[in-house]
Amino acid sequence: MSPGRPLAPGNAIPPLCYNAIADRSQRRAGGPVFVMRCPYCQHPDTDVLDTRKLNDGEIIRRRRKCRQCSRRFTTYERVESVSLTVVKKDGEREPYDREKIMRGVRTACYRRPVSVQQLEQLVNDVEAAIMATDEQEVSSKTIGDEVMRRLRDLDEVAYIRFASVYRSFADIGKLREAVDELLENS
Image (cartoon, rainbow, N blue to C red; front, side, top):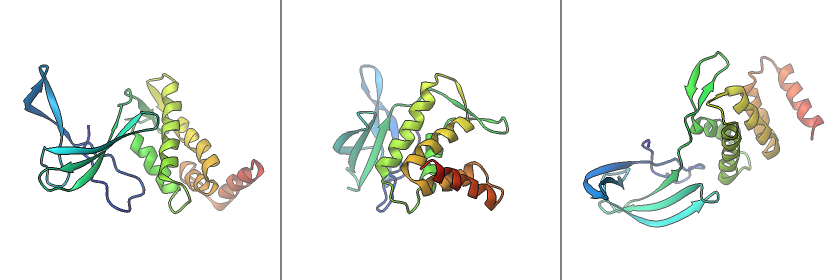
C-alpha cells in the first residue's frame, strides 16, 4: 500500500488514498489489525461514513471521518494486480504502474468532455486486456496500442493528443497522416 493524498475539491480524478498502517497493539485472530490513518493529522482513528462498490465490486470506495480533526477524506481499495513487468522501447524493464496509464489518459483528455468514470473504465479495460495475456512481461507498445484503440472510440481529439506523444511525431506530416487515418476510419 502506498500513501496517498486526500480528495481535493475540484480534482477531476480522485487520487488513491492508501494510508493503512498495522497497529501491532490490536490483534484479531493472531494477526495485525489495519487502521486507516488520517491524511491531514495522521491520527490512526477514523470512522467509515459510507462504503460503495464501484466497477462491479472491483473497487471499494469509502468516505471516512477523522475522530481527531473531524476532516473527511475518501479511500479506494483495489485488488493488487499480479507483478507485471513492462518492457520499454529501449529494452529497459520497469514494474507495471496503473497510475502511469491514468496520467497519460488524463493528460490526453484534458478539457475534453470525458467523465472520470469513462477514464477509469478505459484504464480498467486496458488493464484487463493486459492481464488476460497471462504473461509476466508486456511491451510498452502493447499497452500504448490498447490505450489508443480505446481512446479512438472515446474521444478523437484525445486520441490524436495521445498518439502525438506515444508515436513521437517528428513533424506535422506524421500528425497529418494520423488525422487522415482517423478521418478515413470514422
